[in-house]
Image 1 (cartoon, one colour):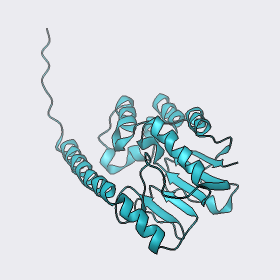
Image 2: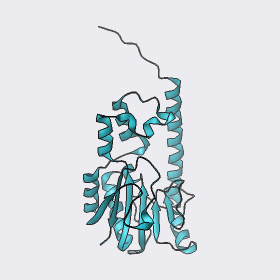
Image 3: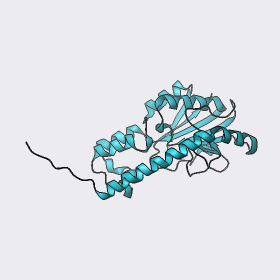
Image 4: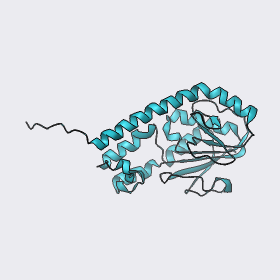
Length: 227
């Protein structure tokens, strides 16, 4: 029998894991704060902020001028959780935009949110969804896995194999359900959307939805219209 020796992880990987754990704790504190402040923020928005008809879900640090910029933590216009009802009346919004958000919740939660989005959109209103494409990820795994932008970030230079890459893509950043066109169509159909079109980054039949994407990994994009 050949005895294999344990290999100690490199200091670089250890430091990366430590930073990830610290970020997880920080995100948890923000999430708990958002839970506590969900209703106060909704009340504050409806009582004191100018009424707007465009909602940006999962805004992070990117704020869209003239939009309601919402996320799960304080410091935004509104706190929104995908598993909760949106704090708007039916038929009250014209646009909803979300980039790299839906893949962070289970499929059933994603469908619930899409139903809520359809409820609050006006007839003819549009939700634009941008996210990584599972089919593109599988193509990279089979062919050139180093072509992805995020793989070449300095913090990810430790990735050595296609298997390591695809495991990270599925498991890191809180990813819970990755989509391709077929899966996103299923979610939209389950939520009641019947009119939708897949788009290229930055392109849309609706001028105010053009050029909103900021991430190279946003390769699966759809405009869904409430009919």
